[in-house]
Structures are given as C-alpha cells and as structure tokens.
Length: 287
Image (cartoon, rainbow, N blue to C red; front, side, top):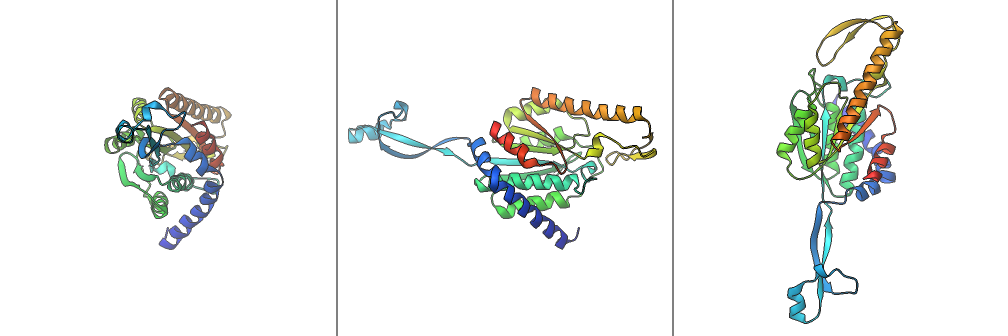
C-alpha cells in the first residue's frame, strides 16, 4: 500500500474502533483489569470502621489521636499485543484480510488501554520475532501499532507461537495483559502456554477465514501452503474429502481450546468480520 492508503486505512480503523471502544469496552476494561496493587496516597484521622492495620502509628503517637494511611490502586498496566505475521495471516475471502481484522481488534484494545492511561506494546513474529515496539502510552502510539500490523511484510515461514511468548517473557518481567493473535495453523509447545499464563494474563485469539475451516466444491484444485510453499492436488468434489478436512479443522480448534484451558489461559475463536466487540466485552466482564 502507498503511504496515503495506509494513512486512510488507519484513520478508518480509528473511527470505527473508537466508537465501539467508548460505547462499551472502555468501562468493562477498567473494571476487569484493576491494576497491580496499592500505593500510599495520604494520611487522615481514623474513622469508625477503618482497618486497624492501616493505622499510621508514627503520626498517631505524635498527635495523640489515631490516623490511618489511605491507599490508592496502582492503575497503570502494560498490555502486550503479539501478532503472527506468517503468510497465512495475509489472507481473506470476505472483504477483509486476517491482518486487517487483527489491526481493528488491536486498535480497540489499544484505545481501551490508552483511555485508562495504560501502556501498549507490540511484537510481530512468525518463525522468529521480527519487530518489537516497546510499551508506551497515547493515541499516536496506538495509531503507530495499527500501521505496523497493516504494513508488515507477512513472511512465508512456519509460525512459532511458543518462541514469541518465550521472547516476550525474557524481556517483559512485570505481569502484563497479553493478547496473542494467530491462526494457529502450525504446531507449538503447549508447555510454553502454561509458563506464560502463570506470569501474565493471557488471551489467545485464533483468527480464521471461513475457507480455513471448510473448502467448497471447486473440482480438482491445486492447494498451496503460503507458509511452507508446498503444493498438493485435491479433489474437492469429493464429499468425503471435504468432510475429512472440515473435521480435522474442528479437532484442531478443540485441541487449542483444551490447551488454553489446561494452561489457565483464555481463548477465542474469531472469524473475520465477526463482531469482536461483543466477544471482548464478555471476556472483560468475566474477568
């Protein structure tokens, strides 16, 4: 895309997502993620019902009447967005590529975080980590993240989700909100899911096009794997072949759901074009 097209696309995404974010998601986001702890705010005279453990004994002794410490929640959080940029993510048959759908969801998440003064960072990966944008605050930073997702060079390589999470955990030590976008077409080490979810709050999002799950009857067709470059002829007219393919995809999703559940992590299966705002709203509400 040319620069003017990129700017136009980013603006369109900002307009659409900000409406959704301000209308429903921001309040739920704030309620769901309440921060990392408490910090000292001020001292005030003791009132009936205050916790005894909050008494400031030094000030109480000095003024000969009880005073308590007032604590405030530490609101600032860090959100990390991990995006699979293997070639299979640069695909779509319903008017929207997977990468465009991811950019829109990431924008909605980013603006929710920015509205609560949280930092947002980005990791683009495929067979390795290709780009890291450190967590920062603000609208301009979110727009930069959207632009990077849209304009990344999507790589013809096998995606390694576990390697991306391992990299993230090695750099970002503090507990973060982690949103992992991929079509999960490739295998991964499920142990890394368990390790990551112990340290961070993890939500995996499988982004798929409807043709990923079911292939229509188009006769004999040459199928091409965008990540490995492999080609294979298939008789898509065979109802048995189409059924076997669809069942294999369903089994893959069931295995993903099981892996994330066993890791105490969350998981969403999201078709391009679906109303992601409802799914995120329900996720925030549960948290």
